[in-house]
Amino acid sequence: MAGMISTKGRYSLLIMTDLATHDGWVSLGDISQRLGISRKYLEQITSQLNKAGFLESQRGKGGGYKLARPASEYSVGAILRASEGPLAPVSCLDCTNDVICPKTDTCPTLEVWRGLGEVTNSYLNQKTLADIVCDRTSGDKSVRPDGPVTC
Image 1 (cartoon, rainbow, N blue to C red):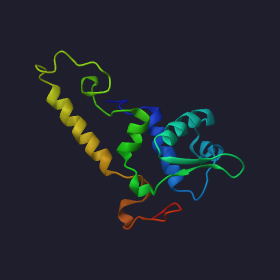
Image 2: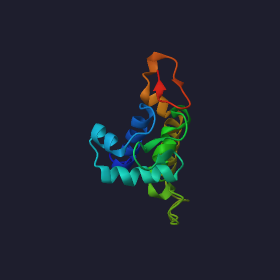
Image 3: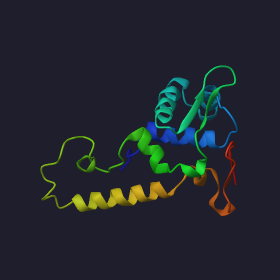
């Protein structure tokens, strides 16, 4: 299943993680430099994340982006769905494509794909942005309402 999550999805998660570890407004230039991702591509992704309500943005000197909520309130699944769309493992389970597979009633493999989708979505929905930032063995994940995750 190589490629289930695209570069856009992976980068969305990296951007959100970067913002969760920095205080205040963070410029795209700084994120671009730290992550080695072109600023132009970051603009596309942050625009999508901003429209999803995950980020706040401020223009001008001293502006940039920051998380709209504490990192513990973002599931990995929600971040990936904001950038990728549905995370169905096969197109016949993607209910947003308006194409219903004619073999849905007789397909012997449908339950395998449905089960995989459930397991994948459950796992991704349980993981939070704070989980990514913090080492699981460190214990408490505290998040200041106006600052980065502290572990």
